[in-house]
Image 1 (cartoon, rainbow, N blue to C red):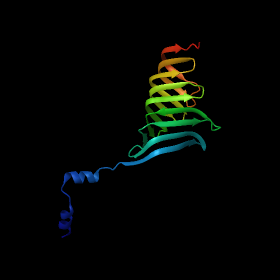
Image 2: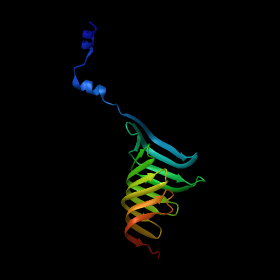
Image 3: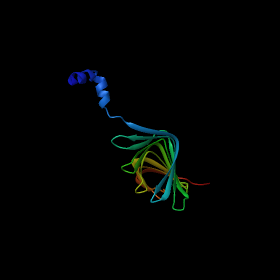
Length: 170
């Protein structure tokens, strides 16, 4: 009698059975966020983005799909550099942010980096890319392939300079 009751309770629709056993993806979404990033209890950055999505599957990650702006602070809480991008992908287990599309980093000296892709390593407080870059300073414009720079963007290294233009003030 028990086995016949169990048989009656079984579902024969293959799509419904497969859907029941599929892993459900958890996504948390927030709109118009402002987040403060600290390390060792010291505020290091302020992030502003219109959309924040946190995916909780095999790799926990945060996606900022519709622009972001970050202000980076020194130890006295003065802004030392700023960053803008159209998209960002943050992987919690790596503490690395991948920035894409119209990435711009600029410092208080007036130096500005433009590139399509950039990686920000939070543990090293460093930016890097292997892709094309252009850096505009008050005196010149440099074009190249690949870059490494500290988070404050006070210095930078272009791996391969492809062109440069010197500005002459008249």
